[in-house]
Length: 551
Image (cartoon, rainbow, N blue to C red; front, side):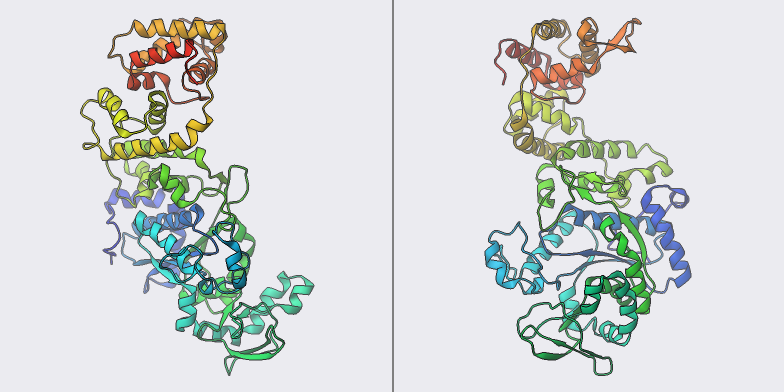
């Protein structure tokens, strides 16, 4: 039965047939799930799970896990003609002890007394309505997931443990304690083997999560006995949130307890995947289908970490670009490591709108390979985007615009009939462009003072632009720019052929234009920019450059 809360899908025969053959990675993963359901039966919903460790503020990798899992879920729905119910559970490991204080909190010293306490027992360092650090970080995650429109259920480990939802699992872990230890001990060093236990008691005296060996395990009584921090032996019921499982056993035990069918995780979990599976089997479950994705890196090539706060946060990306561009970045090559920092945003934005623009004219097979189908769960909007984001950035640069009205004056002249009211999507992009330019492009601008060859070339370009009609389009202007470069030896490229059979034009010519006129190393097609900015305005820019008034 179709879940009415999920976006309806096009279930036409051509889409069903295309889904069965599509090589897009979400369909490849979904086909594995179809085979799984054929084996286990379709008498219950297919459960997708994502895990979140709220030790720091949510970062983009966390969002990516939910976005990518949703893409597989949508592919599965199409493959099964939406006849099998699905659920997506976002599970927060918020009962983990706070092993170190994240750099991102405002007052690290204030949290020191709460080290090793469950994250939901640590006071909220950010103030506001949330009663713990874990609750605050959970709320930050949910806020974004809700903003993006994901269909999901949220689960808190603290709530699951304390409410008794995992009591049966904990008792079973007691009964199968020796089997769990047989799985875990060979993976540990000799010293760690002597103290290891899959159970982590929450000290009733200090509230801290304790990593201590067990002195006794009593499955019939449902208790463990250990030595507390003060040296006293304590016997504790494992139920009701008094005890939690170590993270590796917890992973596999949760799969068994909830009946998880699909979970993806980062490459850092890859070496432990076999352990999770074995624990799940020991606990009487069937391991889910897995998908291991590559990690995101910051601009220095280091792994992004919630506790370090390096890389981009969710809010930072959304300050400068629409959410759909972020989802595109998640869709592309999930098994390749990718740097995730501010410089990747403009390209992601323009690629997103290009995919949306091409979608309507594609046959079904190509539509299912188009990232826009996966980003929008099959309901791809129609968007008119006459000006690319990269072009808007150049327009802000050249016009020194600090508000939307200035940019819209250029846009409306370039694309008659376009206004902020008739194209709110473009208006949204205009706002992003101004913010992105002010924060990232403007501080890095460095205008090049032209040498004699460059001065002559720019003067020649000015003359060619003056000879063009005022309404010349981007292609005509681009040809004029190429003609100027083709006539100057410095900008000739013998590896390319011009229309007259002579040498073509080197990219150095366009680099020179950008460096001298806009203070940037490169940019989009310059002829299209001139058509948007205006021929007279571009000539005025050249004049300022030749007079030494730029930069």
